[in-house]
Image (cartoon, rainbow, N blue to C red; front, side, top):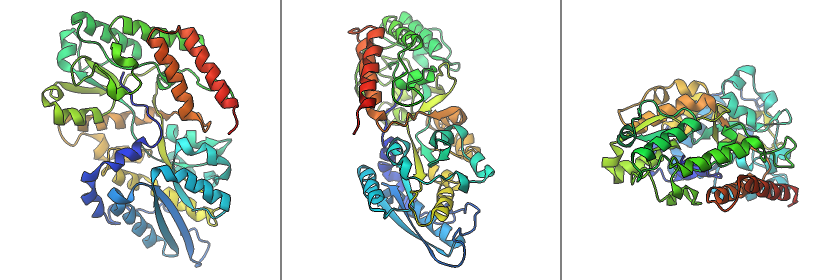
Length: 440
């Protein structure tokens, strides 16, 4: 399956390595990024408003873009002064915790949704500051997960996009399969993989294990509504695990798929020991094009496979929040809306391989049609098509990363043959419940 589901600051790490964009970004001005959200200055008069906002690791490669945003907002709101602080990724949580404790908080803060939970009580409800039209401007599946008990605690910004399928046309044709008609579901992907392995026993279908993301895509609830206990130990989850185990037995899934680090898969698209990836990302193609052009030339792109839930799941997205103790919540909310509006998100996406949370952005030619004949551009267009069916995997426990890894470890044990599906799920359930019951 080869689905990347690493949590944390995956998208920020991606931005950090895009040094090729630096020269472009430094030339950015307000004419490229800087459209107002359409509100007034939100200051309640001629008094000067001072707002401090934090971003994460953007100044080095995207300083020009952010400065363009600042210039554009200041032009439309001359009574607002903006102070920009760019914070290293590992520092943003402790720095914000300290600010909240002291009462001297920034006004607008970039946080990944994975870090929201520990701050929710200290965040302003942005709902009253959005018009119905502004709510509709965001993808509903990316906005709704930011609501807590009826309060909107953040605005969605960008994400890494949902996975697509990558297909070795030569290998699948050898199995009598049509690369232009890739598997639509995981069940079909298993059938494809078995046919590939039957046609050539040295080649397997795909990589991957039925981890938390796959379970969610198959409609399995991970957590009880009160977030105090695991909910995945069900017959439906066992059926998913057993389907994947059968897939590995039949050669639909490569035997090396149980490694903890997917970068260490022994059978890969690049070495042509797997024929396709039902859930993968264009980054795989970037390295392949550079280092293995002959193999790259055989690849094709298609929609990612889906489970019974009928939606794609991404583990994280970047957001903007407003601390409740900001002295200018209304003005801060207006600025956060400006930072995340469609035009400004689209401009950012043209500088980096990221995807927007706004509906209007998807109408831009960047997403509506490939810029070139490259399948990398085709992949970007395909991911954009999938965004309306993409939702955010957010359990909201404050311990999401550790919980996910505990479940994955048990699933790996099952797929390796050392545990039954029942035992793996029961052990994972016990570990989850112990971790959820523990107080920090």
